[in-house]
Image 1 (tube, rainbow, N blue to C red):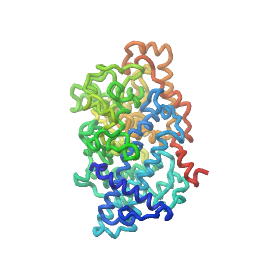
Image 2 (cartoon, one colour):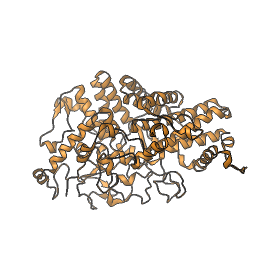
Image 3 (cartoon, one colour):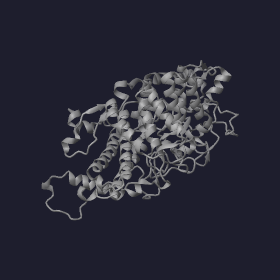
Image 4 (cartoon, rainbow, N blue to C red):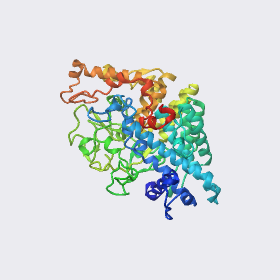
Length: 578
């Protein structure tokens, strides 16, 4: 379903409705018989379907599924950037209530919530236009799922939110108190998701691909319980998704980050993008405004790719993430491995300086750029696999996958591990993900080496062979947190929320700072031959990029686990701004 192509007229329509309904009588001295108002709009099922599409359209906002996510990727341990980019305030954990993504994401999520509230409110007022009760219920279920999704993002990005479930009738109605994560969850997210789960289909016709489903509602419900540490409830929801047999892992990791394999068997919740609509429009503009026409494209690709190929080098894999991929050994007995020396997962996620595949159609190193401390570049959500350069107008049509089955497997493993210490089941589902990547499974390591490999401990820095931890709940937990989730899910928008909910941000930053200081030590710096060709496994050249020094020093859980309430909200919402 290419949502945006259906939206231009209806978005303008709804904007007019909002303006008209908010005007006082004194402002309307002359009636326009052709004007669109609430009295003339919500009168057919087509009107409701068009309005529902605008709720979906909010998913395409850059702060929700697009280029705005680059800022959040720089929080944590998976990505760094250079000092001369404005994104550096996130890499240094020095963002504020006026920072770009802090303000934009809040506004965009509440636009989605406002649109959902409009649909739900009008279903109560004008729902009689539906002769088919199932159609009315379907629209309500979709709107409530999307509202729950937007509120989940609000709650776990900002540490709570302003609960608005009705359409404001006047300026005073926009002011409401800031509610906690628990309050937002119990009052909005859980009721909406339970209704959605009960009333959404398992699948839609091909012409409606992209609409939310029972699987999306069940998966997000499990994630809500997981974040609440309601382990058994989370496990139950995830198991329902798994046992439904609706979803299966794709053969290749790359299938989840390609425009050629969208809405595939692994995808559970996905935001569609296209470069076919409005050619030439800047992909970073979603809705029409007074100055520009919106596109249906995603602008994230230029943040992920390499400078020499029309991108910007913004999101750069950390040495920690790079080394995780290097140490994630391929399994020579796995039939998916032929001549490759690196895992399929690595091939879909990052490109190292010593990689053996083509990158933007050229052998690695054919163009300059493998210096200045960059040992690898991000691949996910860039067009490296089919273009020679990124589009100069920030246009990419790679859909953004919010929930996919591999994540469900790993969250299920976490839930059963924390619920009752079920190590065997946790390993089983971790290994399902590892087999698809073509790497040695945890069960193989346990059988052959007697424990869980501690890949999160740098071999380069420690200057010692791989260490193994005895099999236990703690060692599997550490593997999930520090190895498997970053390897499988890097650059997909989960990492900072994971580190925060586990309460390990400071420990991780401090540990990686020590690795950084080791590399910066003059003796070690010389041994790494940074001034020359670099040494395995990272081949760092020219400098050691400092990703963790200021982040470790600046981080304060109270200030930084969640984004601050934007200054604009504080200025306009009387109930939290004073």
